[in-house]
Image (cartoon, protein in one colour):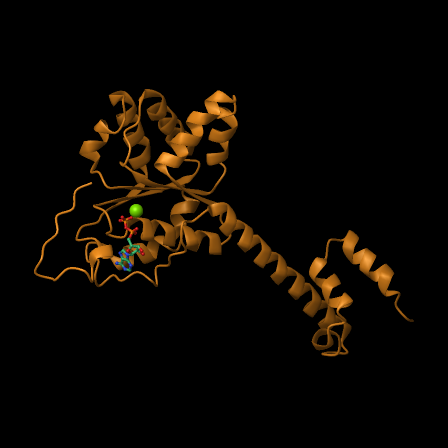
Length: 255
Ligand code: ADP
Ligand code: MG
């Protein structure tokens, strides 16, 4: 029985089997001449469809994550950054913390690898199919602030809660007024026991009171953020300046 290719393609279209349709349209030699066993052919076609969908999903997850750059744990030099325990990080990379809705906090001066490690864990999560969103604290607070004007605050706040993992980078570079402090609290509160957070900050917790214009809110934020959390205190000189200064020159970084 000869096959009407146009009908076949329209079936594949209706069934949304895009990759298989492409293979049929291209009369892919490798696939269609590779076997005479129909089961084997069906297996080959469906495997390719599944692989193509996985790849599309992966790319979409990367786009939605909005990582400023793709960083990996393999690309992190643990020899240089001795204040981070590699095995602890590798354990976290197994991502049980996401299943348990736990948080991670990276504290330390600029350039010590906080954003790198936060991103690398986010990348692991995307590779495992989790929905991740990376944002700076400033960008998030600005967005929530501006949503007050057009009445979309609730939706935008809700959007931050929809990811399995929300990474809030660079808390500490801006001081928040009362409204922004409250918005920040709402993000943390919404995430509490529902979603994982990774927060990075150049300020130790003792200084967080100065970041938020409301001391009650600061303790409520810390309370929820730290209840189920993994804390890393990174130390050392900026990796950005690694090759620019001699080992004898000590750099003290503030801010
Ligand atoms: P922080 O967020 O602590 O200010 P970053 O993570 O942005 O620092 O690090 C600054 C730059 O140095 C980034 O390009 C990062 O990839 C790189 N970097 C920092 N620490 C390391 C490290 N131990 N190994 C490899 N690259 C590093
Ligand atoms: Mg950073």
